[in-house]
Image (cartoon, rainbow, N blue to C red; front, side):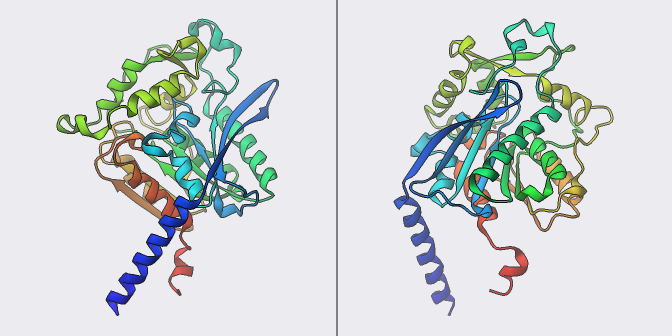
Length: 346
């Protein structure tokens, strides 16, 4: 009997893999109006020929503090991106760039010296931008809910959005979630923050490698992957000439006032989340160390059901590392599986 069951599982797995490979993925770039003259850039990936999706097959992905979502979630290294992986499995997937990031409209203040204006794109404004994209997708597909996938600061924003708009969120994925910090900040922060900061390719690589054990650095990021991602990412800022990138400082100000304050304060209230929640991160994450998710997990007391997964041999940027498939599979299983009460009777 056991051998029969194992055989069935293997057949189903092989069928699913073949099905995913047979699906052709199409992409579309969308501009969602937001405010006075502002447009939010949104990348969409979906199975070719499919225009109708149920709520449980729609996902919106939210980027972190510094780099845009389009070049991170849709980075086609090793033949496909995370968005491709999801679309091959029947999902309608969207990745947005907040205003001030990537290919979205940049505030006029970003063309001035940073010290002439306060930090741009605070969390409250970012959540409003997410709401604009969610409402656009809900109307486009004629549904009432979507799944949200947030990375790092994006996890904070998606969680905050869900506490305010629970009826619009089916399932919530918090990838590398930041919570109350009890250790030192991994990177130096300016004493007085301007509107934005400038990040170079060299600084980005150094930050990335700082989370990797010395004997793993040579193998964790396959040859060419960083350059592929950096070229796509830094090309989104025309002023950087492919060498630097401007990023709004609102997230840094929020971090100093909440998670990194003394004592640290919560930015959002976990007990207000009622949808299923996945916390997923990698073991070598320095920006969102494992203790953060461990502390957050028991506070999600009203989640319909929840899961906490720590992935092996990865950093804050495991989405672009050799073990990225662990992240893809973990999130995909969470989004696709039946609720515990339903699966228990099957």
